[in-house]
Image (cartoon, rainbow, N blue to C red; front, side, top):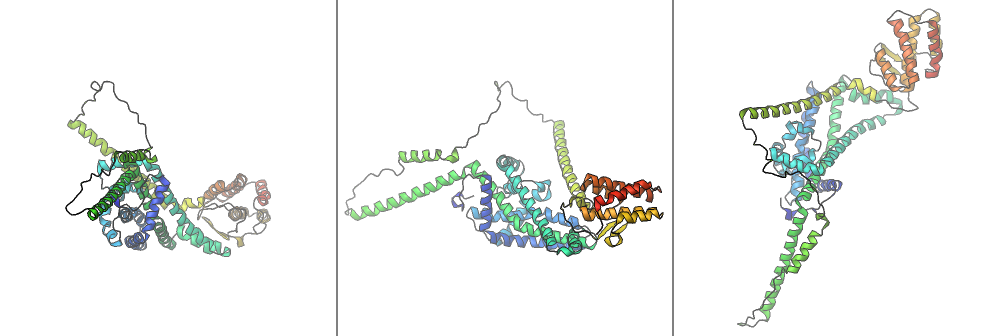
Length: 500
């Protein structure tokens, strides 16, 4: 690293200012960075699209594409680091560096370090310093003591912005649908991402492309901000700003001394007579008081005002409390190796468990996502079609006065039809008037669970009574008492009003 050729001001900064410095370095070379980005990522995007179209496991294809994201960190870091230290930056050199950087950063591609919460701060240690093994871990501990929390915060902000952009595109597309078509075209748009059958492929492709757009917008700046944190840590730990200031001061002094010597030589040659050279003594350029003044100014700088108090325990008699020499016998070495192997197995097992849990949540998303989509509001457009396990309910097949129709069927001895009408009308009105979200093809039990988790307690209690009466009659062959049916019909308008 040539500190004399740095193209930015090196000085201790706050963490957020250091991230801003990294973002400014990315903006300075955005053209080269984005040309390299598209050349590296577009082939991966095309392969992922073909995998989603022709492979039976599109979820694994999308996971593999996301897993290879650190592959793009190398050329971005190459560009900003070369430019910072006065090197040449162009697309060709950045592309040539991709294989070498991929080999250096293989820890972040093939191991659980892919989940490193401060990856943008950790990758420069392997790529720019070329450290491995124990030296890399020791260096990482030093940097983590300074900026780990802010590196984690940077990664968290990056992931949340990615999620916001993804959900924002879905919501924006839904809002563009006219209100009259929200239940048809709008539901189809949302179902493209969460639906079944043919819409799954389209939803996976849209998810991939939206993720790529968000990644293109944010990822280079995320890498640059992490590089700014890394450079700030090096500046504070190694006093780069002081070294640069001393070197530039020496250069200025040397330039002034050379100019003064040249001026004196020319003047002396012009006034001196041939053959007569008057010997004069010149005082040295670096006077002691000048050196003392410069040294005092350096030590008075606020950058050196940082200090840290470290306390440690030391034995009073070091000779008497020496630790015994480590046991180097074969048995002890075997147990140490076995312990390290067990720790690695446990660590990989935990990461695999996390990955399986995320995969299980992704596979079963159609079962639990409807419960998270409850949108409170006073006015909602009634849904015209509800799909249950027992069939489809539409507004056209339900009477306007449900209690009167139920009591009419009950009085004519059509007990099952009366309770079926009461149950279907309650389900339809619960969804249409109270905004309860039901899973697709929901059973009676799933309907009760959804109402209890999303509706007020009074409505949930009433709905549970309706479902219980229907279950006794439909599956148990036991008709409820007439007083129970009349009570349910009396209470129905207070909860639902009318179907219209």
